[in-house]
Every structure is written in C-alpha cells, then in structure tokens.
Image (cartoon, rainbow, N blue to C red; front, side):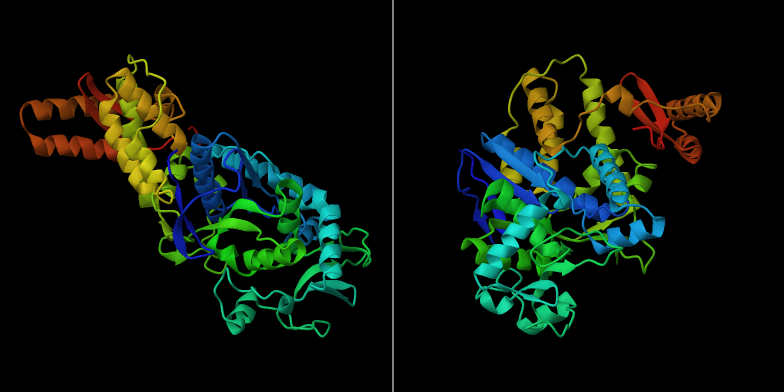
Length: 455
C-alpha cells in the first residue's frame, strides 16, 4: 500500500495519513455560501480538494466526499430582500451557477452535497444535546456555545484568547456569559427566514451547520476536514469545540487548509475592486487552463494569480495537448500512473512536482505503455480530458486568413535564406493578429492565441 503524507494543521506537521477505516475514507470540505457568483478564491479549494479526492480514490477502495452548501446566511437574506424574493430563489440560482463554474474547471461533483436548510432538524438536535451537556445556554431567544466549557478551545488555530476575540470580531452582547461565546441559534423577525425550535422561531448560526451535517452523514469524526486557511478561525475552531462537547470525540482526524489567493500581488477584496469571478475568467481562458493555474503552486502556500500565470498554463497545455495530437496513432495501454508521479502527490499533494513528472512522461508517449502512464497521471490531475483537435481548433470568422497564411509563408521564405530579422518581423506581425504558431515536422501550425469562451 502506497503511503500518503498530509500536513495536518491540528498538529502543524506532515503526518502519514491513516484513516479510521481503510476500507472507507471520509472527507468533508467547506463549500460555498450561495449569494453571488463564485470568485477565483472560491475555486482554489474546490480544485485542490478535487485532486486530493482523486488521489484518495486511487489509493483506497471506497471514498465518500462531502462538500456542503451554505444556504442560510445573512448575506443571502440581504440579497433576497434587495430583489424582493424568497431566499430559495437566490440560493437555487447561485448554487446552479457554482456547479456550472466548477464543472468548467474539471471539478467532479461530490458524493454528498448537504444543504444547511435540509438539516435544520439535525442542527436543532445537536444544539439540544449541547444544552443538555452544559456546553450551551439560552439567553434572550439566542442559544450560545459556552467556550469556557471546552478545555481544548483554541488548539486548532493556536491563538491566544485575546487574538481569538480580536480575530473573530465578536459581538459584545449583554446576554453573553463570555465575550468569546458564539451563536448556535438566533431569533428571526417576521421578515426573515426562520424555523420553529424549542427556543422560538429562528435560524442556526454558521458554525453549527457543518458540525451537524458531518455528524449526520459520517458520524462524530470524519477522516479529513478541508477548507481555506481563512476558515481556520473562527469557523473551524468553533466546529471543533461544539463537536467535541457534543460527542466527546474529535470532529476530524486530519485538518487540511489551502493557502490564500492574491490577485497580482494584492489580497482579493471588494475594497480593492479586484474580485475576480470565475465566469469572467472563463470568457478569456478555457477552464482547464484556470484549473492548471490553480495547481501551479503547492496548495498550502499563497498563490499569486495573474494573467502571466494563466498564459503560462495555456502554453503548458498547448505542449501537452500537442503531444496527444502528435501521438494520435498510438493506442495507450490501460495502466497506472508511475511511481515518481504518485510519490509527488502523496507527499502532501505536491502538484508542482507532479506537473514536472507529467512533462517528463510526455516525452515517452511514443509507446502504448508510455502513453498509458501519461494519460493515467493526467487523469489524476484532472487534465487532458478533452480532444486535442478541439483544443487546437481555431475560429477564423473574424480573421483575415489569407493575411495569416501569407505572413507564415513570408516567415518560411525568410528562414530559408537565413534572414532572421525578416522572419522575426513576420512572427511579430502574426502575434499582433492574435495568432500563435508552432513549427512541426509536418509544417507550421497556427491558431488564435485565445478562444473567448470556446474551450
């Protein structure tokens, strides 16, 4: 059995992954809050953990993967009020959009997609259990978790109490016993969505949702819990606390967090005006290039997302699809990805090293076994699942094809007489037309540099 090593943020070190039951691995990842279109920061955990799940499925006989939908939230309420519609209209719209965008990035659907609105009974049941065990209390229509009842509170985020209070931007409400206590249930006014409960009509807090959904689908403890590092505190810390107190067991055995994504060196934020939506990027780049760009860095590290990174990903995919095009007459064997490639991914999901191994494999595709190994490795990365002919297809309806072909011929003539200045000038002219060229044994192949929304 190949050994998988993952950086467990619970212990701040890389550890060998040893699931509770090797016959059935469980993984839960925090999904989107569906009140607007997904931005590229939302896409990074979806892509990263999609690759991890592919690795797990390669190593273990059964894997159950859950990624939730948060469809109870004040931002959803605000959007619904702004449009004058029920929250279901908002959440249905943006859940469908999220699915569409992630599918365009090659992200497979999870096995389980729990929605908070469909688990309110489970949430109420867990809150009732916490109250019975003295870890939560009722105050002015709210139910709050008492952080003083969890001796291990803060162990995941490794924060001092003062830092936790500052980082959580806690509401200093008069009904709280401790400033750090957080809401499990809150009352709803008549104009807000709500559900009947032992504490009156209201709605759950954010943190309790994930704990209750994990308990419903996986029991007290899941093997792996993932999400963005921005969720480590307070969301994941509070999940840990309430689950420990409710069930007397850890919520997850391994905690994995992907690093933050910056846009051209700056933190992505509304105040900076640099929120980059996935749907906007898909207008300029194929989803596969966006996926590869998100995998160019090791998942735990921050990633600077730039046009240069996307363009490099396009060039890399051109090379890889070019290999498939040039070896179209080679029928691949059915085989596994080779050890060096799998070793890279089993070393805390080292996707940059895995990509280097994939390029090395691309040089061995002239044999059925070599091509089979190359495709098997690409499949685990979620790449090269398209048709090379379609990848290189060119829409020439808005292009002067005769001019392009004349420039290619002019460049060829210049190269034959070793007039390299003229050859470079022809290439530059092609570039200004948005045309890229590739010299092959069968002649020069050209295509448009980008196909807006076509791949």
